[in-house]
Amino acid sequence: MSGTIVVELGARSYPIDIGRALIGDPVRYRRHVAGHQVMIVTNETVAPLYLGAVEAALHTYRVEKVILPDGERYKTLDVWNRIFDGLLEHRFGRDCTLIALGGGVIGDMAGFAAACYQRGVAFVQVPTTLLAQVDSSVGGKTGLNHRLGKNMIGAFHQPRAVLADTATLETLPDRELSAGLAEVIKYGLIRDPDFFDWLEANMGALLAREDEALAYAIARSCQNKAEVVAADELEGGQRALLNLGHTFGHAIETGLGYGEWLHGEAVGVGICMAAGLSQRFGWLDGASVARVRGVVESARLPTRPPASLGRQRFLDLMAVDKKVQAGRLRLVLLQGIGRAVVTDDFPPGSLEAVLDVGSTPAGQ
Ligand SMILES: NC(=O)c1ccc[n+]([C@@H]2O[C@H](COP(=O)([O-])OP(=O)(O)OC[C@H]3O[C@@H](n4cnc5c(N)ncnc54)[C@H](O)[C@@H]3O)[C@@H](O)[C@H]2O)c1
Ligand SMILES: [Zn+2]
Image (cartoon, rainbow, N blue to C red; front, top):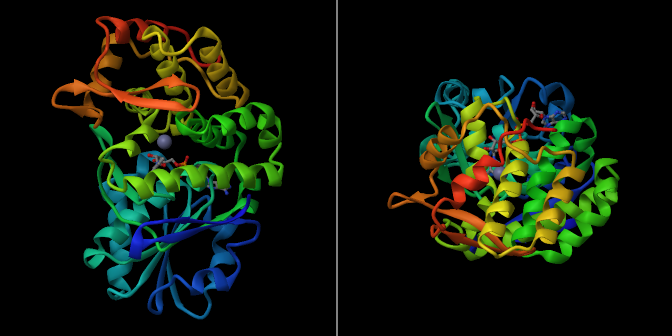
């Protein structure tokens, strides 16, 4: 199922190319790079691994680069400003193209810079983590963290293309691979039960980084995301289902400080908590909840929140999340494997009860 998937957005439609050795192929860029000036935005970890190949593929353009420090804690306004320093120092015009080379942090920062520089310039996503290949590089959400909340500053800005090179995953740390699998599992749970079955059967192949399995999982994940984004680009409706596990997850990330737990690890726990709450609603039976936990566990992800976050702190953190509308907390829950709904109608005490489950440290 590797190949190309198209995100259908009329005139702003774009391809997601999935396969090996894409990042060094000049043809992949030529179709999507506007103008002659290209700014590659990457970080200190990814640059020594892949910047050379991307630069070589772009040798017919005037290429400059900005190399940012590595980590979620640098996804800030201050660090982001360095991209504009680079663009302005090199006198880049409105017809330039930004290339985001790295994981979701780089994709979000470079994409948001592309949304804002001279009121919007072209950009191409070259995601190099599993999470970025299946999720953050697709769909046009870009942004930064604020001290008081994650991804609180940002814009919608669609890329011209996404190049998901599965060969780049060979250098990804195990923990990052698992974190990406949380988002992959999410697609199966919210809208693709057959994919969930496939994941239960093929998790070993994915963890062993078998190329065919990875390409299949990336393509199927992107297909799901592309369909949701095409139906609801600006998150007025069904796109919110992609936030399964995220309100819980963001509370963990913010509560512990960015970078302590990986985004995908927090989402893995969040998915389990959402399943637990769904069971309290009578929507999911025990066997289904066990399947959810089982698949999260098999991806080598934690299934319980960190003990250090108390119940009240957890509730306070969830209230800051952007899914709170008109003062009510809205959560994505499961009515079955492959069927998700957004609701703000909780039986009294049910949320508190599911948070009580969270008294055991991750991995125990
Ligand atoms: N825009 C969206 O729709 C969206 C969706 C999901 C997540 N996100 C955001 O994505 C971010 C998380 O992304 P992430 O998980 O990719 O984290 P990340 O960007 O921090 O990358 C993880 C780590 O892997 C390193 N790395 C990247 N590629 C590598 C490679 N090929 N080999 C070795 N190391 C490599 C990075 O330098 C970093 O240390 C969060 O900020 C989250 O908010 C955005
Ligand atoms: Zn996510």
